[in-house]
Image 1: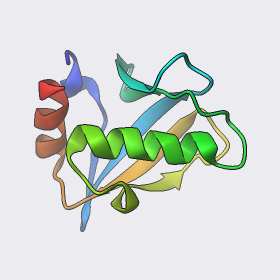
Image 2: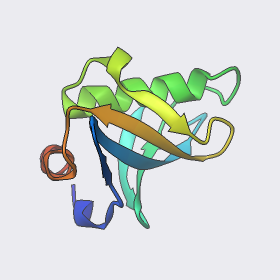
Image 3: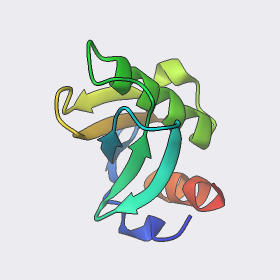
Length: 101
């Protein structure tokens, strides 16, 4: 994936925080690419009762080789712009894994 260097990953004590732009009700679940300083993720799930948030967490976990339960939404539960906590990964590791995607 191109432009992974543009993603504004924030390092924290137990991992990093990934900004995400979510597109619900898409035709398929996938990582679309980089939009501005965020990762753009499309999901077939509707934006109701946390379904899209959970689906995006699973998509990110699968792409980064993490357990889906470990990827946690930390900001933006009702906004299309969200932040997910990626435990145990540095920003450099996240960029490397996304570049391989």
